[in-house]
Length: 104
Image (cartoon, rainbow, N blue to C red; front, side, top):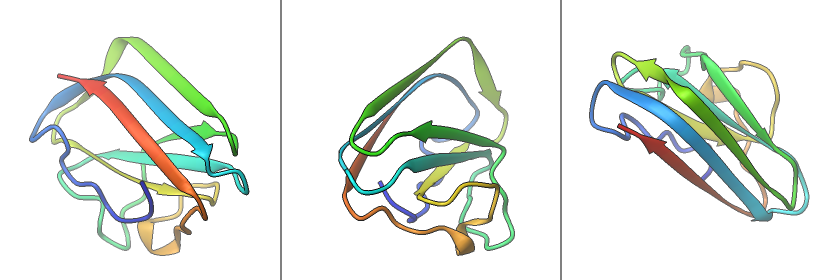
C-alpha cells in the first residue's frame, strides 16, 4: 500500500471489523493508514476520518468487535505523515507495506 487511493474497497456500504498493517518490509519509517467513509478519498480536499498506526518494521492489528459502519463505502491510503492531511499531502513509505481489512 502507498499514497495511491484505494477507493470503495468493499463496493458500497460496509462494516469494518479488523485492520492489519504489515510493515515488516518497511524498516525506515512509521506508517499511518488513513480511511474515510466515502466512495473516493482521491480528492485533494478530503481529509480522512480514521487513522491506524504501525511502527516501522512491525505488524499491527486492530480488532473492532462492534465494527465501524461506513454508509457510503470504505476508501483509504497510506502515508508516513501524521495528522489529518488530505491525500495531496501524503508521503509514500520507502518499503513495502501490506494492508488487510475484514469487513462486510
